[in-house]
Length: 136
Image (cartoon, rainbow, N blue to C red; front, side, top):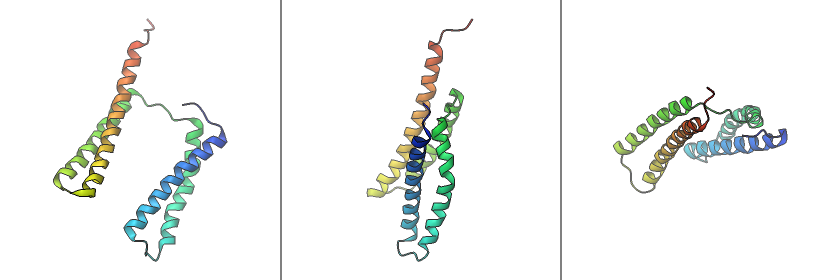
């Protein structure tokens, strides 16, 4: 990933942190109900960490994302595979119908995609290592 200018990094970080904060605030209001009388406190609980994370996200975008090693990709794919198995076990043991089933299976499907993505990246790194000429 190429390095960004300070301004590009700031706007990307702001968009990322704002989207995450809005999603968290919406989820909390959904679970607490919109008629919750202390919703400004919920807003502060979401806003303060978002403001603290903004400089970290900005630096991450500016410096670029560090590449993982093949072993790290494999380890993460095993971890995500275990999370997938837990979600799938929950879906099997707690059968649902209708939209609840769709939502549950979409979460499981997301973990499957993340696992497969990490396996693909590890495979691609192995393939690239084989294509490089040896130094000896």
